Amino acid sequence: MNTEEKIIYESLNLFSTKGFDAISVRDIANAVGIKASSLYNHFKNKQDIVDTIIEKYSKDVTKFFENIKIDSSSDDIITTKMNWMCDDRFAKKSLTIFKFYLEDEYVVKFRKLLTIEQFNNSKIADLYNKIFIDDVLAFQSKIFEMLINSNILIKKDPYTLALQFYSPVFLMFYKGKGTSDMDLTYLKKHIYEFKETYTMKG
Image (cartoon, rainbow, N blue to C red; front, side):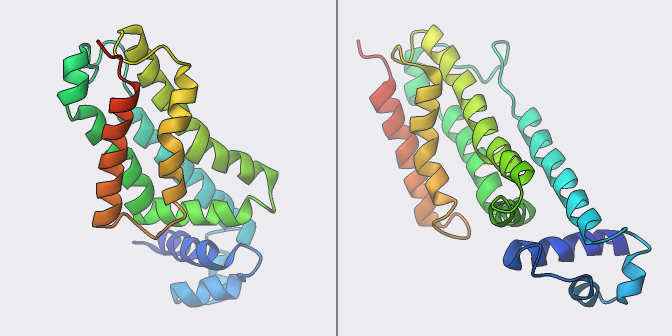
């Protein structure tokens, strides 16, 4: 990890625990182990650091979703009701998303940073909503729409289904620091109960 990367890493640690305003350039420099004046060789100021953090980790989250995209030509699409009920692909993909949000060290800290700063900055509030709410709901709505069109799920608004599926999980973001074994057990139970409730009968 070079000096610039250390500055970003330590700044993320500090901002995600105390907020942007509570941290000084000197605090960041001390955490990195350099003089405060040396920090300006890499960044203009504290705002430049937080802007870099937001840009970097926003791209990382976007890239993650691009890598797990599902479309109608994907092998991940489950086309029969029996496969939907028995197959674990949807559960595994859902757990991959949730674990990424709850266990990835950088994403967890990035989420905490945005959670704190969303009340001070409307652009950060919009970014928080996009990354941790809107993008997830859009991804899940697309899956549910395809399952509805395949007569696997009941005829219901896909976005409403996404809300009903994601809302309990979203609450878990604030319940703890990560996914304990109990959390994962709950997640799996939630996924399979959702299937039981919304799969077309008969």
